[in-house]
Image 1 (cartoon, rainbow, N blue to C red):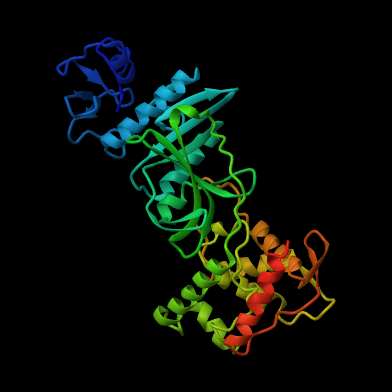
Image 2 (image 1 turned 120 degrees about the horizontal axis):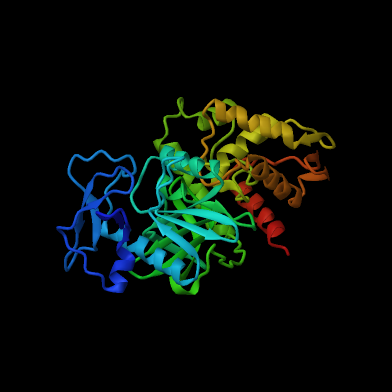
Length: 394
């Protein structure tokens, strides 16, 4: 902790104490602002000065020990907001909801609760804490503490490995792109991962923008340009995903492979229109080839030319597959809507652009051309080239 009460009940902020050169002694009595139990001041040449509860203390406001990395990040963020002229309090306890955010910020009649999270916590805790803040009109703002492992690069984008904990910090921007904020106190840099495009469950294609903390305003306003995903890269990754699925999955227990074989299809010879990247697909943990295959076989594989396809019907089909655990969704506690409808709609718009559908009005499409199923690899290559030409003709 960076705050505590002294023996007269005055709140001591270690950040201000350091800057003012106030000398605080270790043997001075200090108390937790929440539980009022005694806390110990810890400081030294290496340690960042902070308050700590005594062993076996049972304080409801502290659920995890703070690392030096977390403490320094919290100090940096506090100073940055304070010097920007904003009203900011560190570790302010909110008794009504029994929460103590790392930072509480006031700006333009809005209150933000900043949670700087470095260590993994259960997603249920993030959801609960976020809901607590919103219930009293406070906007939660979670920042991931750390850096991301780059596993490779392709053109203007890098390949990252993101787990479920990383994904829990993602949000949508105004351009309907998923992004992720992080801060590294070692470099004093803020990073934005944008255009997050999941290639597998953990492998993600993304563009990274890095700026010094001092150059930013709050709330953050990063500008990013749209980046088109390389068609050949995507096809190659899709093939690798299918091949691994065939090798490692238990065919009779895997719902995707089971559905393919039941319909007398081959995993390696599906129409190339199945498994194409679309907006909002990051909300789905299942690969696009899986949920797009289900939409095709359950929704419009037998639809004749001129007949109608309704977005609402495909949405119902999608939710049924979720209920049967054939489609897995990501847990994204900071995203307030599920965006399933938007994701399916963007897929239908892609099919419209490719000439398979015609949009009569929003949410209502007419079948214009059915998918062609490849008979062999030569057919597959031919169909992929035709689709590439159509997608990148303009």
